[in-house]
Amino acid sequence: MKFNWGTGIVIAFIAFMSFILYFVVIMSKNRNDHHLVTEDYYQQELEFQHDIDKLNNAKNLEENLRWQKTDSGMLISFPESLETQKIAGNIELYRPSNKHLDYKTAIELTDHTVLIPNDRLLEGRWDIRIDWTYNNTPYLYKQQIVY
Image 1 (tube, one colour):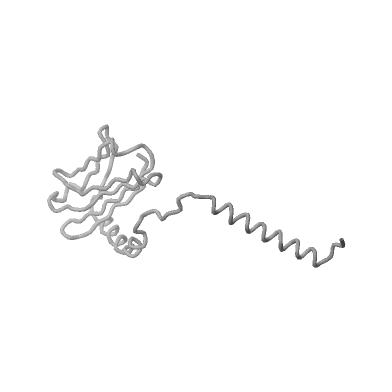
Image 2: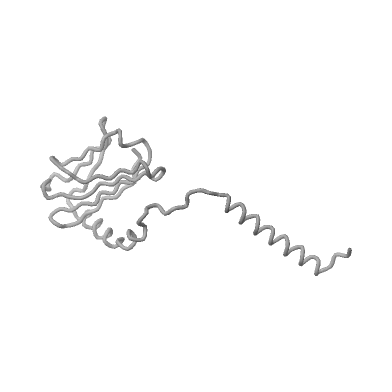
């Protein structure tokens, strides 16, 4: 059999089709989780400007939230100048490596601190999101930490 241009084009076409089929088979066998980070991603994207406004409100405070690692857990401190009865909101701790470790709780203050116990937290990376209001003004505190 003589090798000519027509034969070369057919061989190249068959090689290209084999290459594409190989990738289709490999990708269909790969069953990794390729889900969005959060279940309500699109709703959160629509509220992104509200989050920016809340972050700006928090920057305008004389003193922002603080957190520290203690022997009993993570201690989140609200500004001392604010009245605790007028503070409301939610604390969310997001663990990027395992969604089963995520933690969410409502803010209930007796003094200016909230303690998240050590048994709820593992060492490693966490994303803190504290969405709170004071006198009907919304605030947001976001930070990535290593606990």
